[in-house]
Image 1 (cartoon, each protein chain N blue to C red):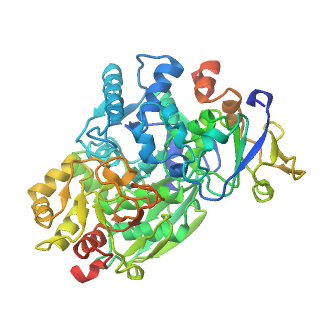
Image 2 (cartoon, rainbow over the protein chains, first blue to last red):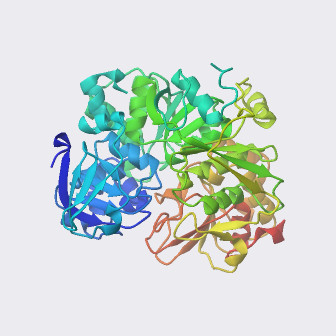
Image 3 (cartoon, one colour):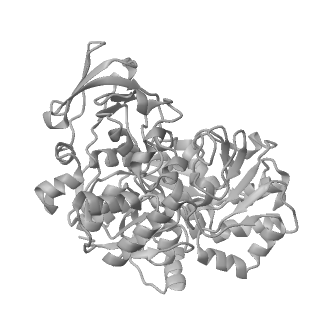
Length: 173
Length: 419
């Protein structure tokens, strides 16, 4: 279940293409509670999956289409997803800043070509970060994905870039 | 190394010089970061990372660091006021330049203060940091943690993007603005198409510095890592006469290799709008003429500059707006220049509300949010559902000229009839 074991297994929340950072957490809610990320949690995916925070279980994963996380640089977006208990996101591709932000806080993002097309809400997914494979157990489909660059894997395995610097020193980046 | 790089793209030149070795697209490299900044939307997580996650009360920034209080400025909530207080304290304790309430929007103020120079690598904790590419820098938007790493280390990692060349031909016609060029590019490329790529512009002579900033500003809407304008005479003059600075030249080599080259005919361009619900839903303004709007907003890091207010005033001179029209200069310097030129007077006489320098309603935080069912025409950069208020409100994006003409009629209007 943990990144430390390199394997993540969870139930799927399925989303579509072009989920923007405004869909994840809108600017108006972000700024209303700008001093405390935890207070933004009830508004996570407010318009996309109403009541998401009461429905999600720890370890669940998100599977989405193209351009996940486009828009703002707000790091509250991946932080809220991680705080909600989501353990990884699989999508066709991710916006650049969202990708960096997620990796930096130790939330694994996996780019896959097949899994997003064949996966439905509620399916069970297993992700092996070290072997770079994603398995949809419900549909019995295995996809080999592109391995993480070494630096990115190091950041993830340390639980984020701040932890990496704390664990390995300032020359780790 | 400079000589070795003479035949390369601007992206490769800047990143190689900052990496201390020759780099090529696809390389994962650590680069020296020359300027890092954050604002009151991204600074809270910068502060909590430094104080809570790392446990530092004081630190020595390893590079030039700036904080801007621009998103909710002046504070509209107690929570925002608390963030501002923490930013001032951290800045004071650690020798960080702080640009407080009223100074203006980060991407406008940074160049006004001479914080960016050609050849710089800039990590700004705001997606629209690409704006600074108008000053021949590799300026890229990042999150708060990336900004912290760059502040503490003076460096950070990145994947060298693949440069794409955009060559302008001809010049824009009356009533067409830099914003229309930006919207054209977003509509042409579509959202998310430029992930892992940098845009490099060629033949920009006919385009003003203000317009260049509008174009590089919106490069993030196609997810480009950076958008770089070459150093030309206009830019050198800007540095010399506005800032009294002599700067490096960054231009691509004659044999620079690009992943793709796109030619944009400026002569044929017409005023455009981005229709809800996505920025890349770009159409000719004529397709939407007559759509009624409840609010017009002229401002933001995309279009709150002097040329933007100037054209709005030219169109609104002697007229009255039919819909509420909010005008917010991007910085206090823009505001002062507009005042001295009589622009603000014209706008107020036309019935506009002129606000203090801030991001304003663009991000849905304050100064002009939309009610359910309302429609706005805005010169800002995003029109996602609920961006500027209620989830059932709509936002059209357009140039300040189109915005001013629209305000006169209370419905979307082609500005060419007013110039």
